[in-house]
Amino acid sequence: MLISPRTSVVARLGTAQTLAWASSYYLPAMLATPMAADLGVSVATVFAAFSFALVVSAVFGRRAGQWIDQHGGRPVLIGTNGLFAAGLLALALAQGPVSLFMAWGLIGMAMAAGLYDAAFATLVRLYGHDARSTITGITLIAGFASTVGWPLTAWLEHELGWRGACVCWAGLHLLLGLPLNASLPRAGHAPGVTPVQPGPATPKASAATEAAATFWPTVLLSLVFAVTWFTSTAMAAHLPRLLQANGLALGAALALSALVGPAQVAARLLEFGFLRRVHPLRSAQLATAAHPLGAVLLMVLGGPAALLFTVLHGAGNGILTIAKGTLPLVIFGPQGYGARQGLLMVPARVAQACAPLVFGLAIDHLGGGALWVSTGVGLIGLAALLWLQRSGAVAR
Image (cartoon, rainbow, N blue to C red; front, side):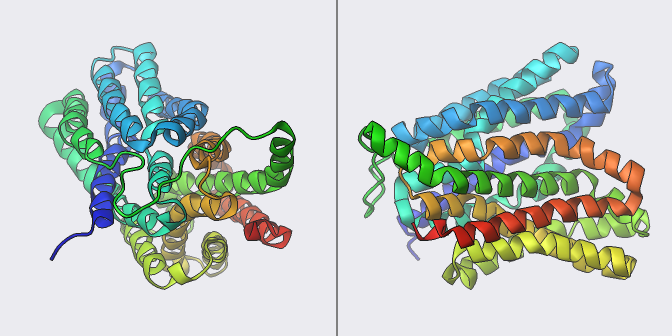
C-alpha cells in the first residue's frame, strides 16, 4: 500500500519529535539523581537547571516561530538537531552547577525551536488551514516519547552512566533526527498544497486595528495555555505522590500513574476520529474540564475514584496538546502562525517552569487537598475558553 506524501511527513516529523522530547523534557526524570550525585549538587539543583531551560525556551520561542514563518520549518528544525546535540554533549561534560546550567541553557534554546510549537508551525506553514489532522498525527506518534525515552535512558545510564547516555542521545540527534528533519518538504514544496506565504507589510492603521481585534483572544489563549501546562507539568512531576496523599499505596499509585500515557494517546485517537468533526474550541473546553471533574471526584470519593481521575487527566491533557496547535490556527489563521504561537506560549513556558516547585509545596502543606489548586486553575482555563467563545473571536 502506498503511503501518501502527507502521511510520510507526519511519520518523519513525529519520529523526530519523539526523539526531541525524549532527549530533553523527559531526560531529568531518569538522570537527575545520578547527575546530582556525580556533580556534587542536590537533585533540586538539577531540576532548577531544567526549569532554567524552560525559561530560556520561553524567551526564544517567538523568535523561532518568526524564523519558521519566514523560512519554513525544515531549516529551523535541522538547526535544532545540531543545538540539541551540542547541549547534550555540554551536559555530558559538565563539572559543576555553572556548566550544568549552561548546558541546559543550550538545550532550552533547542527546545524553543525543536518541540511541538515549532512542529505545529512547520505543518501550518506547509498545509495552512488543513494542518489540523497532521498536528494530531504527530502528537499520536510523539505521545510515546516517555514510553520510549524513559526505559531507553534508564538502560543507557545503567550500561554507560549518565554522561554516556547524554552522548548517545546527542548522537541520535545527528544520525537520526537530523536526516529525518532534512527530509521534510521545503516551504512551498509540499505536493498538492498551496503553502502559506509570508504576507506583505501591513499598513500602520490596519496593523493597529488588527492588534486591537486580536488582543483579548491572545490574552485568553495565553491564559488557557499557561494554566493547562501548569497542571500538566505538575502532574508529570508529582502524580504518584499526589495519589499517595489521597490514600493509595505506592504500588497502586505508580500503576495508575502509568495509565496517563495510554489515556493521552486514546484521547488523541478519539480526536483524530470523532472529534475532528467537532470545532477545536468545543473539544478544548471538554478537555479542560476533564481534570477538575476527576479531581473533585477523587477528593469526594477518595481512592475508588483514583482510576477515573487518572484517565480523565490523561485524556484531557492529550487533547489539549492538540488544541495548543489548532486553536491559534482556527482563531487567527495561518498567516504569522509561528510568531504568534511563540508569543502565546511564553506564559505557558514560565508556568511550566514553576509548576514542579509550586505544586510540590502545595502537597507539602495541603496533602491530597493540593488538588484544589489544580482544580482552581483548571476552572480558570475553562472560564477563559467560554469567554473566548462568547466574544465571537472564533468566527473571525
